[in-house]
Image (cartoon, rainbow, N blue to C red; front, side, top):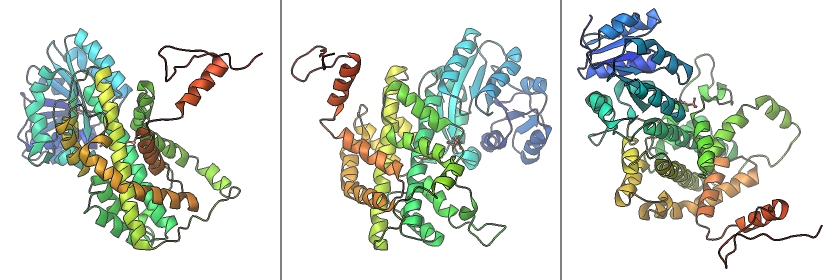
Length: 471
Ligand code: 6PG
């Protein structure tokens, strides 16, 4: 079935694009989908059912089916494919039409495209979308950025399709320009941090105290009913119950220990360095994905470089309880780092972000959804200018109440030779953030010694230089 007055068009009918089209269609909107790949178009048409949805591989027909002013959304891989879609559709668009990029584009590309398109009178929205395939189909978290007026045109469609949390939509307009893609980038940075922390907990349970997959599955399930309740803990429990189809093993034991990445976590770390915001937990997560890919070298070095035998002698239950607290501590640290980065970026790029809203739309639909986000959104409700989540009255208690546990867990990990850089970086972030004094005076002195870079004094204003040695 064809419609000539579609509310919105979708370019890119891969799994994400198709699912989002069907989701829009479920809510009564009329949508035309376009893909050069005819099999993807057929798949959409087969699934469309009674929805006002259809696909085509003719760009002319796609454009003709849109009501005016036209709204063209795309869900294609980040980078060159986005530019090529823009290039393809641009000749068919008129002033006042709207292009929406729903992929994981780098925010600097979004800024560039925004400028180029607004010079031509075309509106552009950069929308971060999280939740994977099932999120797209049944309710993602959506992070829209760009001109607010342009967002108003698609607001009702996005609100209908977004995940709901306590009857609130997990989509709120975030800010101008690349605000949406920036927030999505940081979401993914936090995602990397959480995944690393969880995998360290797995390592401590597996190599440290020798638990089997079923025991690990039970622990993650239990954790998911407590303060760690989150999507990532939930799917982790599921992963440990999956059998391999081709052997008698659990699937997890047949998966190679080399993690791939598309790079959004790395972008977060790069951008944080650029803005000089510390993100040690997220940096550690990016580094550990990189370290995982040195598989061959790790295999070789494991035969030469020895250390403790990676066994932790301890009572099972108290250790698992300590570990739960340690994971909780580190998760709070990962969110704190990401939110602090957003606070700085909001000022730097004039996004005017409302961090309470960011936390709110992450409570449902997205990969980092967690019950902790309710506490985080309350923290920003109480104080929109909160400098760091660690000093919120509720979260500071949570952190202080679990610091002995994360210290104990890290001690066990160090003594047994199990690498826990995510947990360590989280604790060091806390210990440095709460340090009135840090040894950076020595760094200043060293810089001045070898490079005459000058230093500041604690007892007098100004910059000083000392002739440290006599040459
Ligand atoms: C999401 C995910 C999604 C995607 C990541 C994976 O929020 O739905 O973050 O965007 O799965 O791009 O990222 P890596 O390939 O870098 O792990």
